[in-house]
Image (tube, rainbow, N blue to C red; front, top):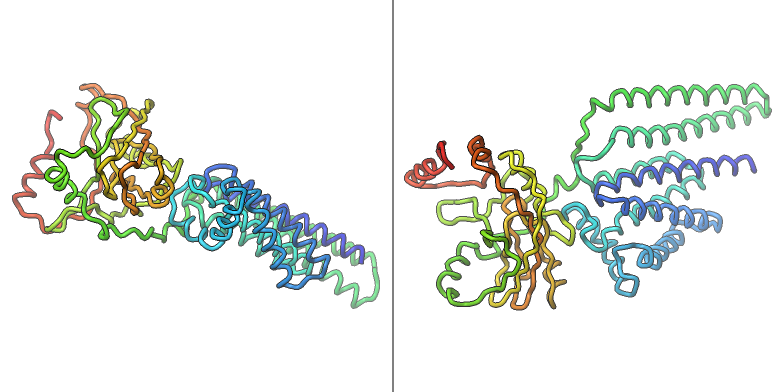
Length: 445
């Protein structure tokens, strides 16, 4: 009996280490170590809950109740992006249901939004409890699948690009296969000993040989993976690639109609006060790149992926645009930044006024929370929208990048950027001819 308990402790230690290794997959969705740390704390708490409930011989439902109580009571105290009060308890309870959807709809990194650490926390806690109870029940195959499933959640809710996917996957697989091989070898040894009713030393020798063979096999597999890893693709299809945020722009008046209103009915009205604008900069309401023969709009069918995404504090807005612009024009990366503040007066529309090369948008004022909860941004067209609409008194603070001004000699060797636009249909031939003449090659720009 003592030998069996000793082996279970070895398996428990191995399972715990593998669960902690699997938390590395949460680096990508959170863009920082906070995802790994929260998941690791969840794993350790789950192991403690699993060991305690196994020792008390609790069944499935009481174990679930203990784990749920630990989740609700400790998460508001331990999670860094949750208030440490009753409101934090409400956030944890709500995020337990919604975080699985929100983590796919929100842009990375998830650290820009509150309550998102519930995802790695709950994954680690659940994995720790399930794997520990599986080890206590001597169901090591199930424990191995729990380890792989917990790591798969971090991958599936992450991004397509991830560091060292083959190495991390090989480490987990080698550990799980090694544990299964040891468990299988132990089972065969016990069955043979029971059949012979003898503890012949030959059985122990055969067992050691079996373990050695399993170790050699796993070493060969690990070496094969290490050799093949550099040639393996480091991109994968994840769940967010299949998920489109549910924002329907047809529910809002087109920005083009807003321009007509601004130029007629509100021509003499003070709409906003702006401070910090760089010299020569312009305010952008929206960029329209699609036309269906009747009206212009913001294209949503481009192959560049989802457009409008819910953004939060710290979400990089211009990363995609800056990279595309630098690649297309050869411009030097922006190094200077400026802060522009918009204090809205009679501007009560959903479309967000922005400045070119915006890096972040931070709302303030009495409606700051309402704006933050409904703020979407399209990095493809550099257009923002607040589904709750803006109102008098709202304040938007934007950090913008000020690009270096290229010289005339630098501009002479550049060509027009190859920008993918939205769909354009039913355009008169005269308009097509005018458009071609405007973008035709020329010696001067």
